[in-house]
Image 1 (spheres, helix red, strand yellow):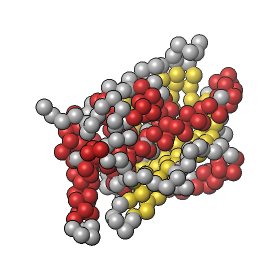
Image 2 (cartoon, helix red, strand yellow):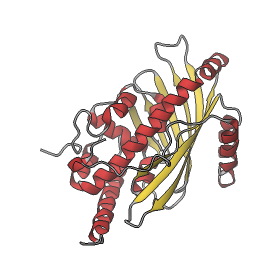
Image 3 (cartoon, one colour):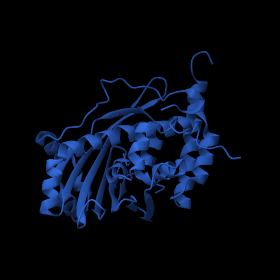
Length: 307
């Protein structure tokens, strides 16, 4: 998308560092994306050994959570926090048609990760980059392409097709609206649905210069048929737990991308040059973010006591 991270938006080459079968993504993220899961793709908008054998900095467990919450109280809170006054009437109507009467609502478990702020914002606004990395690693069947500055179309290889629109974005709030259908072997007729996904994030800058990003996603899912609606409500607990796990692992993966960019930018730039499913402008922007992350990390390291 190429926007400044702080500006609101409306509407023998080296392989991936220590790519291994489990080293970067880990088995959990592998299970998520290898299934071509529609939910995994949507959750990716918003995360375990990295280069030189060093892990991304752990964040205290009292910040990150293990499970989400589907309470009416949280749903009402999320509705109040929607930045509707900053949206066009058409966008407001589109969002509220879904969020006012969702089949399923869930706030995913808050996650705190060690991640450069600009990298976090770039990956949030360009989810096709993470899908492209997974494709390069050979662990996903998802096909995704950008059809406009703020729109993506995706197919998961298992019968799901979806259109995803970024309708609003600033450093603390991003709103995606998705419409999709499933026409796979598990159903006799296509199932259609829509979703609103509000990604909220805040940033804490430590004395050492590192940034901790704490975020969550409020998910409003609406099924278009009575039968699908009843099934979804019946399985809401299972769907919710799956979404929780997807979000936790994707957040960790985002932290790894940031960490690898700090520790081994040359290898990450090689990855940026080879990832499929991204256009040239997005590829160039990703490379620029990698370089900026590396420079900030070098500057931070140079100012540490004793250097």
